[in-house]
Amino acid sequence: MSETYNRENESEEQIVYPYSVAVRFKDAAKPYSFGTFDSTIRKGEWVVVETAQGLEMGEAEADAIEIAKYNLRMPQKPIVRVATTTDIRNYEENSSYEDTAFAICNEEIAALGLDMNLLNAQYTLDRSKVLFIYLADQRVDFRELLKKLGARLHCRIELRQIGERDKAKMVGGIGMCGMECCCRRFKSRFDIISINMAKNQLLALNTEKLSGMCGKLMCCLKYEDDDYKEMTSGLPKMGSQVEYEGNIYRITNMNVMNEEAKLENHEQVIFITLNDLREKAIPRKGVVMQKRNDGEKKEIIHRTVQRTSEPAAPKVSMELPSVNVKPERKENNRNQQSRGRNNSNNNSNNNSGQNRQNNNNNRRRHNDSRHERQVQEKKTETRNVTVRTFGKKKTQETQG
Image 1 (cartoon, rainbow, N blue to C red):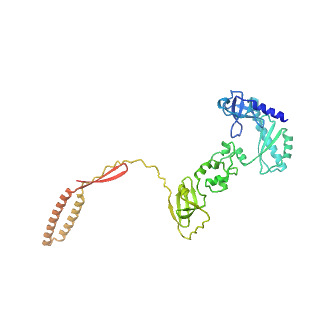
Image 2: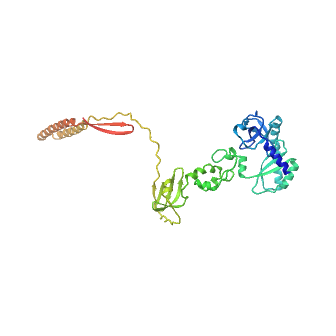
Image 3: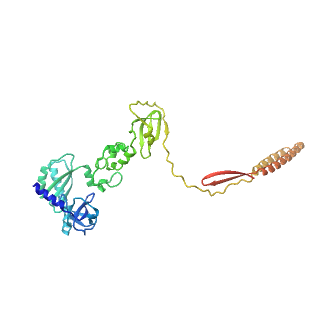
C-alpha cells in the first residue's frame, strides 16, 4: 500500500502544467491557482477543478498565464475541464440539495441533543460527498449522527468543527469602522493577536472595545503594531516612576502621535516631549511619592514643542498712506474756544469801561501770540507718513 501511494504521489509531482489559472470558489476570500494544458481559458469562465474535497466548480479570476514566463514553482491541482451546461445545471441544483441536507442534519442534532451549532452544508459537484460545518465550544461525539445522516442522505458525510473567527469569516458583517470585516473581505489567514499589541498602542484594556464580531481581539491591532513598537522603543512603561530634573514623577499619559508625555506628582503636572522622556528621564523603582493635600492645586507646566502652522502668505495692503499736513486745525479750535470765552466776558462786563479796555488789550496780545505760534509751527511742521509693505508696518517722520 505504501509503495503504491508513493508511486501515485511521484506521478502527480512529475506532471508539470505549462499554464496556471486563478480560480475563486463561492464564498471564498481568495483565489487559488490550478494548473492546466489549456491556454484558451479566459477570465469569467467557469471551470471544474479537483480539490481535496473532490470535484468542485469555480470561476476563473484571470486569463491563463504561462508558468515559465513568471517562474512559478508550486504544486498545483489540475483543472479537469471547462464547465459544460450539465456541470452548470448540477451546480445550480446543488443549492436546493444543500438546503435539504441542512434541514435533515438540524433535525438529527435536535433529536440526539448534541451541543453543536450547524452553520453550512456543501455538496461536491457530483453530489458524492456532503460537508457539514458546525460551531461548538467543545469536542462533540457525533458517531451516532454520522450513522443517521448516512442512512438518510446516501452519500459520504464529513463533519468539520470551526472556531468563532472562522464563523465570522464565513458569515461576514460590518465592523465598528463601518466597513466589511477584514477576514471576509481580503484576509486569507488569521494572524496571532495578543493583548500586548493593545498595550503597545497604549489603548485602554477594555475587552469589549477591543473585540470584534467574533468575540476575539480585532485583527486590525496587528496592522500598526510594528509602527508603535518603533515609536515607543526606549520609553519607560506607563504608570512607572521616573526622575526628571531632580524631582520624582509618575508617567500618567503618553500620546505617541503628538509625541507628548504627561508627568505628574503632588505639586506639578509637566508635559514634555517623548525625546526628553527617553533621554532625560531616569527610571526609579520603589520610591514613595508624597500624596497631595486636599484642596492643593497643582502647577501645570508645558515643555513640549508647540507645532506652528505654516507661515501665511505675505499680504500687501492696498490702503493709501495717511498724511497729516494741517496740524493748525487744533489751534484753530483752541482759538475759537478762547474767542467764545472772551465774548462771554465782554457780555458780562458791558457796564464796566475799564473791564472792556482790559479785554481789548488781552485780545490784542492773544492775537499777536497766536500769529507768532503759527509762524513758528510753519517752520517746524511735521508730517506723519504710514507705509505698509508685506505685512510689516513702518512709521516715518519727515521734517517739512
